[in-house]
Length: 412
Ligand code: GAL
Image (cartoon, rainbow, N blue to C red; front, side, top):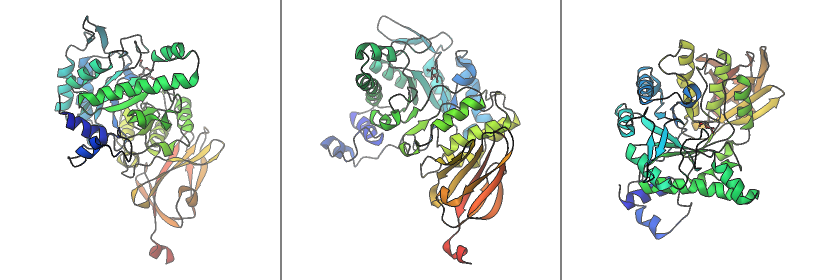
């Protein structure tokens, strides 16, 4: 295990110590080399759940990790290989949790993932059992966290599931008490992770309960689900996106709103719908966790997941999430501030036929003219003045990047 000082540095770096905390402990380590911030930009990777559910194994994970490298996903920024529910076996007499036989050696699997330059993600929860009835970490938080660290885990998704029943029973229906219990349960695992000395992205999955965005960072959350599960339909995907309007201000470097894993490439949505899905997630600065089979990706799927111009919007160093800035029925405009004063804009059409959508530059926070670039057509559009109108396909999006003209240019 790493030294206590090292762990303390990470506690500071992960935001555990309150802002302005001037305790001697914090002061003592302030001069040490700071650990890089976890999730400084929204985490990118791949997870088992959306495509494979419980049909997972060591072999599958290795194949997907290989494909993540071979397909160019790794080079585009996808790094976490995440095993969701379906790996957990039984606890032994010492309370140690063993994986299912389909995962014969988790440490070796973690080493394999790391050997590819990728990072290892895993899944558990604060209740006695997961949503699928498998063992979870209730009463074993420190033991499990230490084991995850020994396997080389870099990312833990922690799913509320059965702890919700404990909350209901022990709070006697008192909502405030139940929410306090929920916060404490996440804090318990956060502390257990810190104690291991191994940095792990802490991914909170409690479906947005108790407005988690207002307190997630205080219990170590690097990301938190804002809703119930996504599925592979336009309607569900878009309803999750719409529900995230007005949550932008809660996201930032180290702590992100999470509208769930991606369904791109899973077959349920049209090309235009999948482009909308990916654009919306990038505009919201959402974690980009692919959820498809990386070993068999069509050219269309690759053109979406590997669109570096859209990924750059998601990963922009300014770390500001975008928000809805205009809506008229099924027509919407979303805008995300980028570094250097640029702004990414999504023109969204939720009807089934093509229609024109307009963004007023002022609504996107731009006063004056701007250079525009279409991020799906990969084409410069020239200077736009006052507003920009595009024809948007049914269920589609037009996504542009706007660069304000300098005042000198403007006055010409
Ligand atoms: C749900 C969770 C899903 C997935 C699933 C596994 O509660 O929201 O994302 O993790 O459990 O059983």
